[in-house]
Image (cartoon, rainbow, N blue to C red; front, side, top):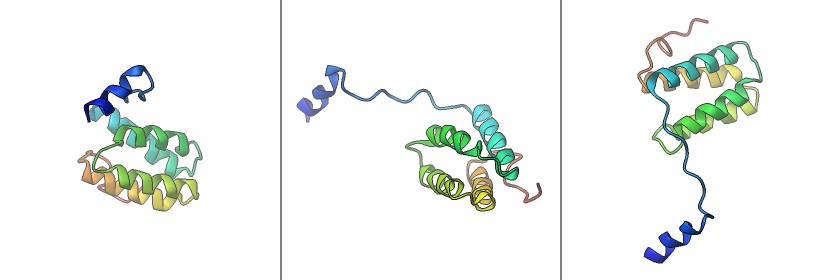
Length: 101
């Protein structure tokens, strides 16, 4: 096990992800993604990539992947509904507590 851990010290180990975004940054990403999905804008693909990266390795990563798949299939309404449920699970106030556009 020690040798396996040392093997990554030769510079071939992948870079660690950046710091986790704070609540304000996460809420801003949610807001942007919610707006893009409401407009059925394909820019949601790039925004979702940033959002998925922010949730990578966390307990909600699987749901983020499901949202990404929905966006990839242009199922914007489904992706938005999933996003709003995820907002509730993450306790992001102002998102997910209504289905209004």
